[in-house]
Image (cartoon, rainbow, N blue to C red; front, side, top):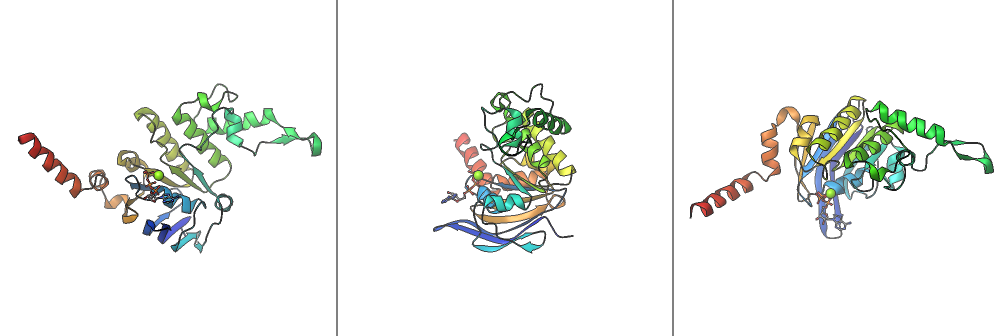
Length: 260
Ligand SMILES: Nc1ncnc2c1ncn2[C@@H]1O[C@H](COP(=O)(O)OP(=O)(O)OP(=O)(O)O)[C@@H](O)[C@H]1O
Ligand SMILES: [Mg+2]
């Protein structure tokens, strides 16, 4: 069986800026591929190539084993690749259930008599959310009244409901505290266990490690490798994220300062 997504030696420039070079990884059904790296490492650029926002200049992107080039986000969505962006996930003043559908609301009637089927829409949204263990008293409340973690969960539940095969999450826990991060990671694990292939972008190795199957490490656009979980410990992952040798040099330097 071929991977849902295969990234094979992909490169991407923005003018003279090399944002990605020779990056490879895979996304399989029922697994989580984590993308880790510091600011400017190229994480969002990689996500945008997978989501059809940008096109790669070099290398190949294979979808179910076939070399593909998305020309728009719609293309990627049609291929079953749903992306949840940190800020663009929801419309704050719109109700939870309208956010859940965002333009794909169920309707009743035909032609000029067609109108929103609010009752059914609310019920579907409520059930889909309950199905993921999100119990909201009222799906009519504005999404802005939900916590950051709950908003991410609404976006995840929506992607699952509309049949996504691949779910891309760009820093879903970046703005969240410890407890809410835990809630979001639990939904990530649930989506994984339902058979979706997940791409999880994060700065935090402690968020990546418990749910991840493999870890792609990016540094200034280059790949430091893609390790399977069995090939790397949480300590080593943390060390590599922190810059490894650079961090040791810094520690040494700070010790010397303290000793003076
Ligand atoms: N639209 C763009 N035009 C020009 N350069 C860009 C563009 N988007 C990103 N870059 C550059 O490409 C590099 C990688 O950026 P990218 O946003 O992919 O990093 P990132 O890993 O997502 O960082 P962060 O953790 O800060 O979100 C950076 O040097 C950035 O300045
Ligand atoms: Mg980014």
